[in-house]
Image (cartoon, rainbow over all chains, first blue to last red; front, side, top):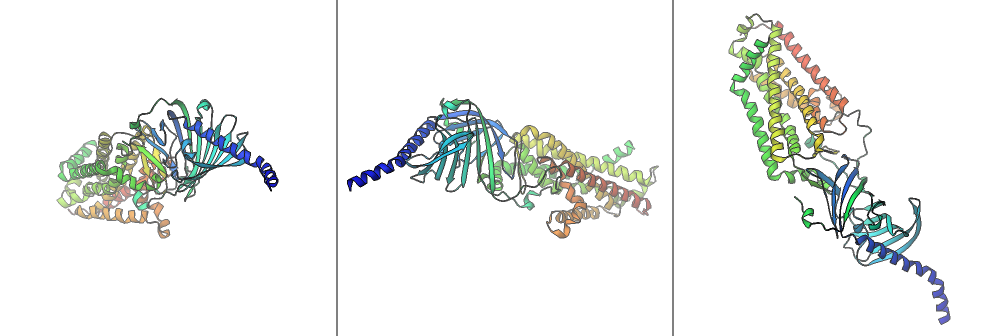
Length: 232
Length: 279
């Protein structure tokens, strides 16, 4: 019987070993991501949402752990995805105790990446499942697919360059579900002459939207005053 | 011709009722600004609910540009009444006072008289729109400051950068002058048929109200006539706050309004030329 168990364990070992490695990889990545306690950066936010007509917005982005984010534009309006969806990688990588599953490898941006599935053991973060594509050599998450309780699925593509050492991206593309926008015409009193220059009408209803954020001039872990995040 | 225009303008601005319009515009703008100062953000956030479900919108949302736009939107419904108040009185008022016959004994042709009356009404309209710009826009900028401007349309959320707004206001006010001049032409036309000014003023408003309802009712029955109603084109000024600006549609609207002005002034001259002036 003992011999049989030993043979069984030996046969299972190759499958168990990568699972351990996956967990280590995940925690190493999380430690690296969370080593950034705060930062400020110049950002350019481009919102590609079917009902929005907004030029690219330039401003300063402030971030502080665990989830404080604010974009400031002088005398201007800033529009960012809501905090609970977050645009910080730290928020899309589940915190606390998690179960990590190895989902093999995939090719992305011309690189072979490890794919991990992460399931949080508590539901405080609002994340049901997070799938992370990791560049093992540089210990970077290049893509995440996060299924949330209330906000649908959020995909995040990260491009790294100048700030690769701190795991801070130069460009982030967030793809997420966008709810329909509609106001009664009796209130808005739209000018309804269909413009010939406006191009074909975009479809209405719930849809996917892209938010592209280009970062530059990061200042990392130099401290950010909490007052910055207060709504004025 | 200039002398006659000066006399007509003197007549218009000598009457206290002329200043009622300026007072009404000031009062409505002030009340609106007060309300926006007190609870504008809550009011506007209610309209942005669908957006704020997904996005955090932060910064100076309630600023002078937005408040100015909201005042314009609400006031440009009432401005036709204020224009009619003066333009509807130009010919009918003279008839009512019994001065029309006397006026026509002077060496001036009837078409000239109609044109002078129309020009005087147009000058009044321009001054009213200028005053509207002062109290609705510049006073709002003074009270609320500048900032990016949000324009909530029924199916679109437009955000205009603050450096890209003022010229749009300039174009919008110019367009509003054309639209309100069409109202002045309509009032003048109706004024030619009446012997007291109440009739043309009320008739102008009745026409504007009925046609505005027809323009805004999304019923297939009215689809065929909607492009020909001047009320469908009067809100063309709003096109300047869209992105991209529908220049072709605005141009078409301006053209329709100009055709209405020419038609109504021409109709007034035609009728007034043949009219038997008995008072």
